[in-house]
Image 1 (cartoon, rainbow, N blue to C red):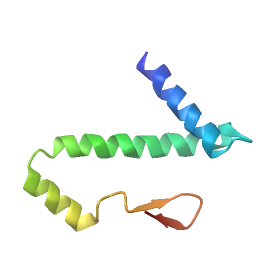
Image 2 (cartoon, rainbow, N blue to C red):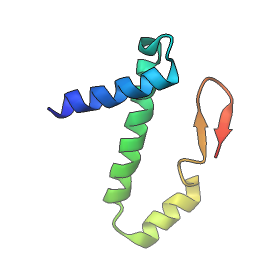
Image 3 (tube, rainbow, N blue to C red):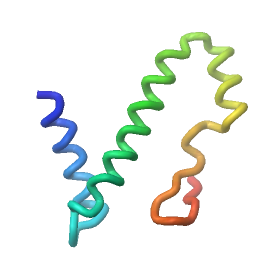
Image 4 (cartoon, helix red, strand yellow):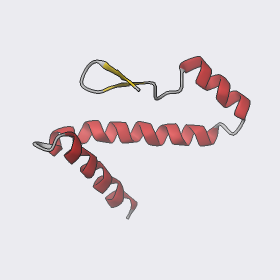
Amino acid sequence: MYTDGVLAVIGDFAVRLAPHDPQSAHAKVLSIYAVMIGAMQLSRALADRERCQTQRAERGDGLSETRINGPVMRR
């Protein structure tokens, strides 16, 4: 089942993020996963390449800033 697979991936990431207490990281990992999936869906929805480039230029690439536990982490 799809849900079981998603929860397994979330669990694996949570263990890597907080090996001492994976349950504490579960909500954060689920949120990050949801953002990744949402970004992928949005990129599929914007089939017009020019519009997509305009959207990316207006707000950045969407992945340049990620907040995890406070300060902004830049790639």
